[in-house]
Image (cartoon, rainbow, N blue to C red):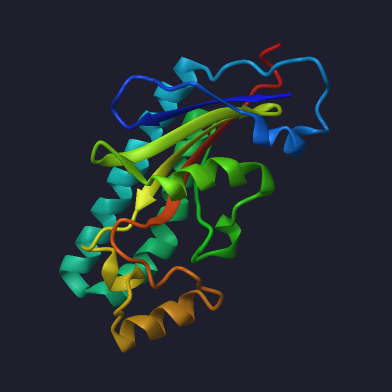
Length: 203
């Protein structure tokens, strides 16, 4: 059994449909003889729009906090604002909207096994043609869209980079005792936006 998967830079048309035979073992529990449907263009378009809104709203909140009170306050803003934005977008769209990362700040944003191949693609190539790369696929009864969050020098380095101020590190440790999301170099994959839609009612 093979999983059909697309990889698309943000803002470009869907391209480079790839079959990934290595995923067969991960899908061994699925019924044999039935190829999964190709990713749905309408879902991908809406997922891209939701992701753009998530990024824009979160960036605005963080930029305001950084400008007004500095990175220590931005940590608490991110801790409260990011989940609120994700919840609002999820309720509005009917999809599940969030963020995941291998080196996560919140353990709730860890990568489940079926997302691993998609996330690994983004780790290998976080950007394409100068914009964050994206991948999408059908995984069982879900349709999934994932877009890279590459590490940026500013303002991300203040809280996620290799040279974090002691007071900022103390604030991170206080808010996120299990934090793994520091030590990133510019251009590395820091995480990914994730949009999911159930396909169980499509049949």
